[in-house]
Length: 209
Image 1: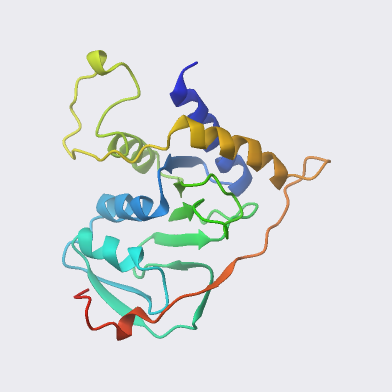
Image 2 (image 1 turned 135 degrees about the horizontal axis):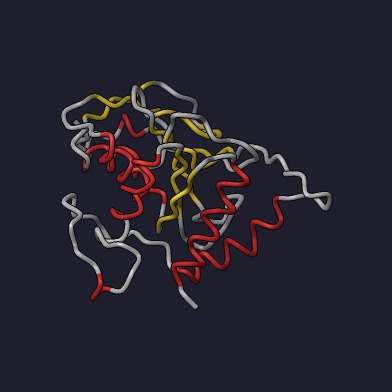
């Protein structure tokens, strides 16, 4: 069995359910956000996010060279939000039928007991850009192609990271995603998740700017 084929099959099923042309699975959503931000390039750009959000979001913005700006937000984060003014979305709390937004990069989370699709640990990016799709696939795999190490040419100049979703986790996702369809084959519509987060803009010990 080719382990890459298992992850590829999960990507195909997530794309089918969400309505996205392409899906790239990774080991967690934090790394999905980091990849998306590096792909579009945010060096020295101001990125606006809710003040109540998960800590990895401003951390990934900072790591990608951006400047974090918080805007007032409710304590409970619901569903998804845009990292303004970019095309990147933090969709950690949304996973539902035909959720894909054309032209956007939506980052999903499958980590933790509160998510709809629970693969123990994992995330993904939805996109309709073939350029982004191919770049994400290489970047998440240390710049490699999905072939034998001895057959690769190692020509990916952006380097890349080891963000690949292991096929064992992908197999869990493949089993679970069948539950997002009704018996007649129609897609189930899932409600957005609501979770409380601290106000990160009040934390003076973290230098996000």
